[in-house]
Amino acid sequence: MTAAGFHPLTVADVTPLTADAVSIGLRVPVALAGTFAYQPGQHLPVRVPPALLPPGAAEERRTYSVCVPPGTAARDGLLRIGVRRVEGGALSTHLVERLGPGDILEVGAPTGRFVLAPGARHVVGIVGGSGVTPVLAIAGELLATDPAGRVTLVVVNRTAATVMFAEELADLKDAHPTRLLLTHVLTREPQTAPVLSGRPDAERWKLLLDGLLAGAPPVTGWYLCGPRDLVTAARAAVLDRGAEPTEVHVELFHAGDPPPVPAAAPGAAGATITARLGGRRTTVTAEHTDASVLDAVLRVRADAPFACRGGVCGTCRARVEDGEVAMSEQWALEPAELAAGYVLTCRSRAAGPRLELDYDA
Ligand SMILES: Cc1cc2nc3c(=O)[nH]c(=O)nc-3n(C[C@H](O)[C@H](O)[C@H](O)COP(=O)(O)OP(=O)(O)OC[C@H]3O[C@@H](n4cnc5c(N)ncnc54)[C@H](O)[C@@H]3O)c2cc1C
Ligand code: FES
Image (cartoon, rainbow, N blue to C red; front, side, top):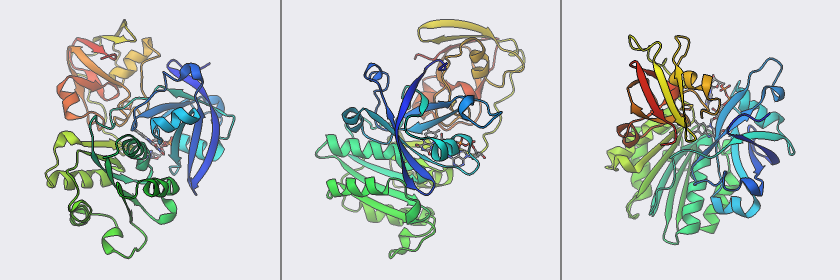
């Protein structure tokens, strides 16, 4: 049986990209075309039921970014994701090593706000490893739909052999030679320009961005995606150059071990949580065994959205309509969303006797 909010999609192809990464094409039935319409940069929750995992494994859910622009997906009817195997990773190992054409993956509707802002003209992408996936879709979309659109893309990897979508990046460059500036930085392989070799630190980021952006039109959007260290350093460098914080978009794929969700405030055990989801309101009483608001809501609403449970994917976002939460460190919500009252339910606990949330907001 497919879990609530997930749809069985047939795997059309699994194409090796590097020794440890694949591109996976998923066939979307015509009847689900609307459900799977997406904006470039969005990601999909993927669920692998226990039956397909090694004996004893529980259901696994993870998030993967769509890596082609919507026009491409509309043409061939395939949603495409790119997956790199993480050492010891439950789902990425399954997807990279065992998945094949004809297999079924349970996939939820696209979500996420790491998307191409309307009116963007010159976008800079700074990506590391598998972080190239959403930015490949963003870059492809801008270059295909706006004849004046420009992309400056810095792709950081250990070696040339580990670059995911190297061919697709080269093809994009060939198709738009004057509007795409593509630069590869290799942290463990020498290149002719020293600034392009080794792990970029603050000084290198400055040199690199100064060089790449000299004489270029103003940047209208910065898209940073990859490992936490790389994204943190790149964000600091970009803000240092005077970028508007609202134009700097960040997506982390993994944040290390997240700190625990704050302990419930006194009196909050037994809090009444009301959640509006899919237009329906449901109420549940928080139990002391609930590690988060999400846990409580899931007991009564199996369709409550979530994927990473670690504060990075943003799938579990809801807006607080009444009451308060205590939320621990998170990496998915932008300052404007926080100011508007959005929280990540996987990182929050009720901080009072009553809490009302709107997942539909
Ligand atoms: C918004 C978003 C979009 C994403 N898009 C993509 C994508 O397009 N392609 C892609 O390959 N991945 C993507 N990811 C990462 C993906 O969701 C999984 O986290 C990743 O595949 C690892 O899952 P796993 O089950 O194999 O590892 P797990 O079994 O969850 O973890 C195994 C070990 O690896 C560590 N770990 C987990 N994830 C990572 C990571 N990404 N890097 C380093 N160490 C890690 C864990 O701490 C643990 O020690 C995305 C994540 C998010 C939040
Ligand atoms: S489930 Fe990913 S941020 Fe909450």
